[in-house]
Image 1 (cartoon, rainbow, N blue to C red):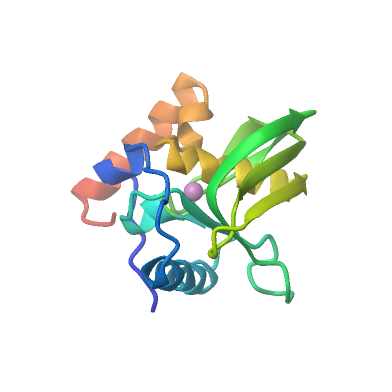
Image 2: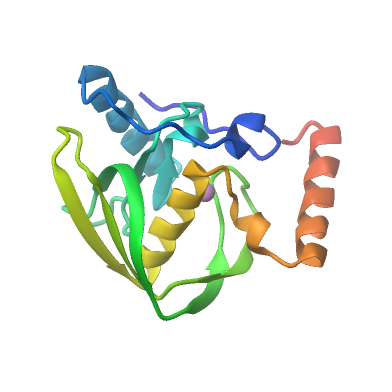
Length: 169
Ligand code: NI
């Protein structure tokens, strides 16, 4: 099932998500729907809060489904190590058609659990590091525009307000 993706302005996107404690069928279904939603967009990552569920769950595939075996589903992900830096253009399915350069670690190590509750440690470099950082931010109610300078951020916010008024958001 493809779920509607919340857009900037929805207060749920700015909330801190709760840790997952039940590794049940409902979690599996949510993850499956999030994967379908991410691929349909298409996008390279999605956090549960973007579909209105305030749980710490992310799905990531830096190939957007182009290559098999690249999908990573992480429950209660936590960045436990960061190295280096990258400063690249970034976007978000909840802020469509806007991008901005965001400073992110070049490499991260992320700990979390799979859908069965088993411990997982994943390493990401380059784009994967950026996507992990971006998605974990979502779980803390942080969006990429929060990392931009005030001027750039205000320009984007103003353009969004204009779109809202025009009924285009
Ligand atoms: Ni995003």
